[in-house]
Structure formats: structure tokens, C-alpha cells
Length: 437
Image 1 (cartoon, rainbow, N blue to C red):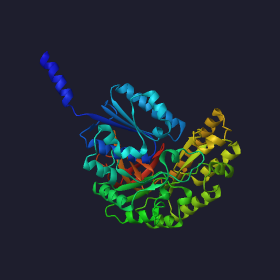
Image 2 (cartoon, rainbow, N blue to C red):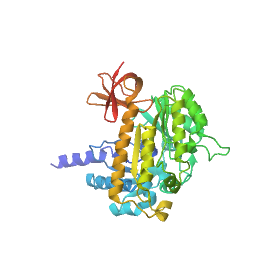
Image 3 (cartoon, rainbow, N blue to C red):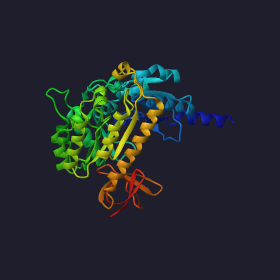
Image 4 (cartoon, rainbow, N blue to C red):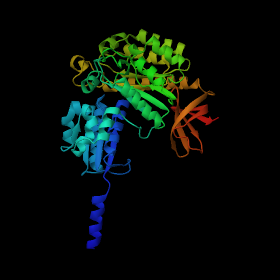
């Protein structure tokens, strides 16, 4: 009996420590998690999946809405139930604005602000970074766990200060990464087999404006398109005022640059846009979308809408509904307005929409957006498109076309990370079905 106890204790001591990464929010957060993952795993930790409890947990939080706050705190509670004795590090945007609420859930949690994410491994192990980990922090990532498309963060922060938005408060002002560092990281990702790179940032279109002399996103895109081995380059989210005629022409001329843009709308009402401190009018937004669609046939537009801004009347709301019907986005992310402490809107606009009315507006716009998405995808029935496949579930493969249509099909061969021509045969929910050709 003594020998058995001794063996169990020895196995426990010698067992490889485990870690789990949990991420909420935007593509920038997902990139940041990958950076922390590579740094932590270099310390001989073993990453485990959702079915297993871990010794260490890293929770990368989001605070863009009040719902995001709740989801972040609920994730922490779930981790505590899963393993009450684990060491837990919480990072991300909620840490900057509401560390007290986090500590109310777990007193001994380790809090790591966004600016210190590259040092998370150093904080966790309470020792100076190993040389190879320093390289990771400075040079970026080498792979992207669970994806065949790699996100590449090129800037952080935002200088626009929309009245409802908390992001500049938690991410700070514009900070662009050096062009050489971005290119070096892209080369490494391509060498590791990634065929598509997705450029990400908090305010992507502002890239390079903080440099002296200034650089631009267009310069960066041109440089990336020249890299050998890159099959696709996709832009994540870009503000309407940052979509230049030169960028539109480049997208029209270059097959490598994916015909898909995520351009936030938020509202199509003149009064609400002014109150939001957005930097365009509804007409300017519409003109941009129409110009893009004329120049780039088949272009997919995805967008964001913020419903129920303080003082939004039904008439104001239906201007947004009309716009979604007109531009036919492939996907519309709809957010109900939630007051965010510290923002201009929180301090100055108190005329909140009743919860019942807000819920009804979100539901109505969601149904309009679903029909718009169906109408867009219907145009591609019978079309032949190249799909980059991501994952297989129960014999069904899933991937994305260059214009961001999610495709599903049955295939016996391994398609992970491969580009293949597909005939699109049917619309199924938010996806399209197809067959290999």
C-alpha cells in the first residue's frame, strides 16, 4: 500500500503541467491568445481541450458590451467550478476597466492588462523570459491553433473615439507594428503552410499613420501581396472612411486580395450617426458600397449594426433596416445598445430605449439581415468557387470561399488546409452546400 501511494505521488509530481486558453471577443483577441499560447507552451506546458481540466487557465476577456462583461465573468466562474485549485490568469479588455468585479468572483486571480500580454509567460512563471520567448513577443506568431487561416495583427488601439465605444479606453491610441515585423511574421506563417492570412487590428485602416514619415495600409498590402506562397490575403474590419479608391482598384485588379470587406454601418440614420460620432453620412456609406459592388463583381459585404442607441425612434431605426435591404450584406452582426461607463454616450445620452422595444428591434433587423444574406448567396447557386477547407465534423468538411461564404460538403479525402474547386449546389441555413469538381 505504501508503494502504491508513493508511486501516485511521484506520478503527480512528474506529470507535465497542463494549461487551457479561453478567448472571447474579436480577432485581435484571438491573435493575442495565440501569442500567449506560443510563449507559455515553450515552458513545457501541455495544452488541453475543453473536455479536460487544467492546472493553469488563461482567460482573454472582452468588454465591448455589457453582455461581453457577463460572459467573461461567467467563464471565470466556470473555470473555478472545473478546477478550484487551478492558477488562473485573466487578461483582455475587461481587466483594464473592471478589475474589481473580476476579483469579486475570484480574489487570488492574476490580472494581466493588454499591454502586458507578451509578458504573460514571464508573469506566470515569475522568471525572466527565455530568449526564444522574447523572440515570440517581438516577432509575433508562427502558427494559428485550430485554424487553416492565420490572423495577423498589424496594429492596436484606435483614435476615432465613437461616443458609444469603450475600446479606445481599454486599447489606447493607435500603435502600428513595423512593416518589417509584419512581413517577417507573414513569411513565417506562409512557410508553415498557411495559404490565407487575415489582417487584423482594432482600427485596421489607420495602420501606419503613427509612423514618421507616415505609412499606409495600402503600402502594407502591396508588400504582403508580393510574398511568394501566399494564396489569399483578407482584410478583417475596416471603417468606411478608410476605404480609398486606390484600395478598391487594388481589390478589383488582384485575385489574391479576397473580394470581401467588413465595413461597420452601426446606423443609417443621419441624427444617430452624428450622436454616435461616426465619421460618415448614411449616403456616403451607401455610395461606397455601390461603388465597391460596381468595381468588384461578387464582392461580399459584412457589417455591424448597433440597435437602440439612446433616443433612436422607430423612424431612425427603419433607416437602418432600409439600408440593410439595399446593400444585401452576407452577414450582419447586430448588437443591442448597452451603456458603457466612461464613454461620451454614457455621460450625455440618458434616453434609453425600453428593453422590450429594443429586443423587438433586434429581432426584426435579424430577420431582415437573414433574408439579405440568403439573397446574396442565392446569386452563387451553380457557381464554381475555390474553397479553403478548415475542419471536418462527422464526415462533413467546412471551409470558406474567397468571398467568405461558408461551404459544407461530404468528402472521404483529407481536405484540411487545402484549396479545392467546388460547385455550390444549395443554401443550407447560413451556409451553402457543394460538391468537389
